[in-house]
Length: 376
Image (cartoon, rainbow, N blue to C red; front, side, top):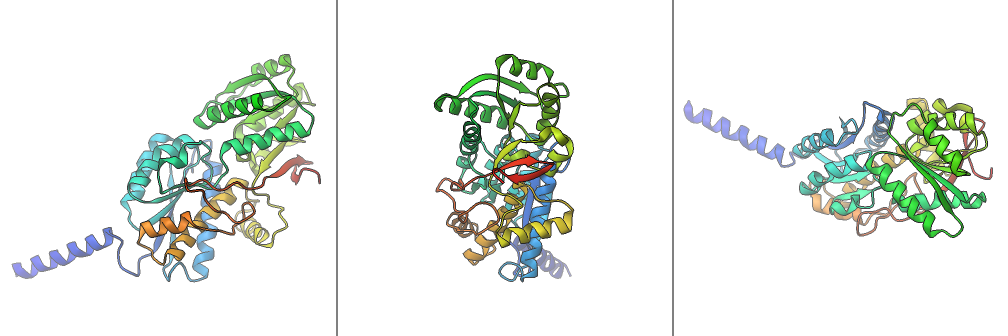
């Protein structure tokens, strides 16, 4: 009896060890979404989740990946570095998770990334703009342009409008500080531009009048707003009540239906450079937009679209590697991918350092409460 019991315990232990190492052929392949599902930036995390859900559903309807069903698992990091560190440990403990879409902000993403690198879990952030993010390791990728490129395009919008006296409003986060520094450097490099004032605010600021007064006294013609929609919208409302003629240029992370809801008429004429536009003429983009609206009730943002493509690239890399378990092969397949997604033309490829190769920007503005291409 004791011998039979020992044999049973040994078999159970072997099964548990097999599951921990990747499991049997009938296991699901899991993709994690790690982003803020609660708090001030929950809109972005929910967009990530929605996009990855659509991608997973599309693959499962087509038979899954290498014959296995795909499952999305969602982790709420609350856009907190401390929470992200815990989430990363939870993710790497589950060996069926083959890739992570997230995290949202650069500081949070850079806290979690070393854990993914150590355990050879592919991590693609759709939004981490910090120049050093992708250099954390070979398994760390970004599916957004480096902040230098977007900042330069934003300043080119100002130049094309004939505006030279530049103000910067930035939020006090790792991303906000780094991006504002980059915008400042680019202004110094571009002939004819002058930085007349730079004001920093905390996320959740209610009264922007001190910053607005500083910009007006300095003679700013245009404000480059380095923030998410939750700051840009109320800032625009308050500034346009003082000076209706002030020009505003935002970043793609503020391109969201929530921006329109919060800012109303004060956003008229606001411009952004984006790598995804929901009114794109491409059929595959319109298919994604149509499915997204049908399921969630509103148009996807640029950041949401990048999350959609990030999940698609992880799954295509698994398919190209011919394995749901060989992490090295999957990473190599991703590094060499040429992915025809919904964000950017031509197809997405990566530099040896894990950065997405430069994509052409679409210039978008708000007119009559809607996003339209500049020049339309």
